[in-house]
Image (cartoon, rainbow, N blue to C red):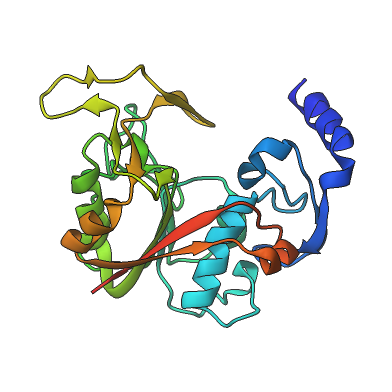
Length: 254
């Protein structure tokens, strides 16, 4: 049924598809529009199933760490680039899971934090990562930290596991013209809802609670943690890589 619905949406949005080259798998392709109101989270590459948002993350990795014009699939196994991705079974995993220095994670109460669920996939709690200090060159989190109860502790943990000069490349919902909207008071052991609960869809855990919507003060927080941060907003030229209506944070450990 889901496949039928997806095909119907692809047909309905024929005029919104975009030809280009995927910067993850490297294929010349047509990026498929499923929902014109949320292109950031679709415009799928039919080869690696990457979304606009994920290709924007790939753009920053290529821009900051790799050779300009390269793709994620072209990272050689011999390159000693250690990457931690707080996502599983995505386009990055599809192209990098055979690399010894690529690790991804999910959180499941069925597994002890730090345990290996399957090769290269670990159970991890972002507030209490089990990795050693200065392990990774890159950490990737996509639309995750709005769901982390103690986000400051989580950011400190990401900072801890990064090598000096390493990058936390991430996305979060953010209003750049106002302060962070705190939706849930987490100062005690129990959650106290300050606003009507907001849930976001998750492919593994279903709907998950959003504790906050970040605001312009996120830059002060990241600076206190020890990051220098910039934001990349998608532009017209990014359309050749199927990147639309997106922004990605790039925080470098200093």
